[in-house]
Image (cartoon, rainbow, N blue to C red; front, side, top):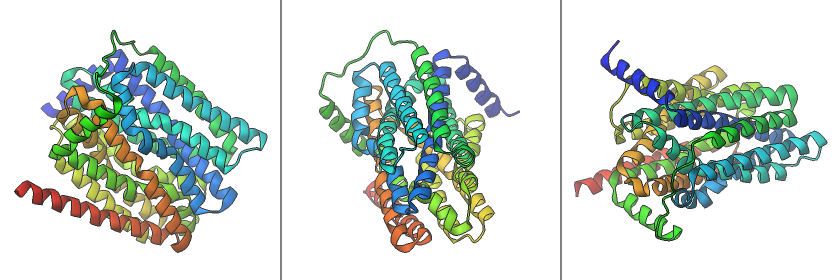
Amino acid sequence: MSAADTQGRGAIRRLFATPDFRRIWLLGGIANTMRWLELLAATLWTYEATGSAFMVAAVAMMRALPMLLLGAVAGALAERLDRRRLLIALQASSAVGAGLVALLAALGWIAPWHLMAQGLLAGLAWAGEMATRRRMAADAAPPEDLVQAVALDTMTGSTTRAIGPLLGGALFQLTGLAPAAAIACGFHLLALFLAWRVTPPRMVVRAPQSALSGIVEAARFALAEPRLRMVLGVTLIMNVFAFCYAGILPAFGAAAFGASGAAIGLLAAAEPFGALLGGLWMALRRRAPPGLFPFVAGSLLFFACLLLVVSSPYYILAWALLVLGGLGTARFAAMQTSLVMTHAPPEIRSRVLGLVTTCIGAGPAGVLLVGALAERLGPHAALYSMATLGLVLLLALLLREWWVSRG
């Protein structure tokens, strides 16, 4: 066993021996699994009910909309309020939304607009995820294990994106929407219990300036710091032009391969499964400081794999390519948070993470656009167009940063 392996395993043991980190980590795993379960079940039901790729994209879009509108605000609030109480409130909103969907579906009253409304409510918790829960996980970790903690949390997020769609697809096919939503509600209540068990802070640091001025201050700092500027730019491009593929995956899987709900769930789990493998390797074998190269290289790899997926004539090949692309998204996700945690001062860290959340929240624009393109051109042409444009924009951003660094 190498020294790096021993060092990595020692960090993991210390993290799991820290009660608050353990609770926050487990809470995140549960809540995020249910988030992806609900998303796939909702989009599958919508496609069955309407047959419209645009409606599927609209339902998916509503979940991410609060991230765009409230991501920066969530970052400012996370520095002004008790983050534990904020986390409790967000988990409670997720449980209420899932419970209402389960009730409406059981009564036969469910409609696409109900799923859109519940998506908005669930999106509130998603908007606070990075600035609240991830910040709390980093703060709870021993200082010497910060990078390891972020890598572990990122790896867990990848696991949830694999498990959630698998469960969502299988549950929907076997039992329908109502039981799937009811199960999600139960697990959200468990996450709420874990949030309640987190140690209350001794004091709440309240920023002296208004929320708006705090956001402006963080934006100025991030745009002036090259590494943080790249984090924001690449995150925006990835979420608009790359991750939008998930929004029309039911339509793409059905059109390209005649896939059933469970098979689409397996396809949706492919990229997260690859990200899990990549995150596990980083958490256990690497302790290098965060860098821009793996962040950008991972993004380029996923765009390349997405273009190949669209051209694949075989389901198994498309699945394998998405797994390979997941190795790239693992580096993208781990470096995204780690770069902020190591290059933003602690007093504005939540606000910068809120700005990253806002860039992630731009994803609904991509989901809506790819849905509209799929409605007119078909899922293949829509995904190919979005991936090509995203790759061109990413290369243009890299070229601009290289030009600025020269002079």
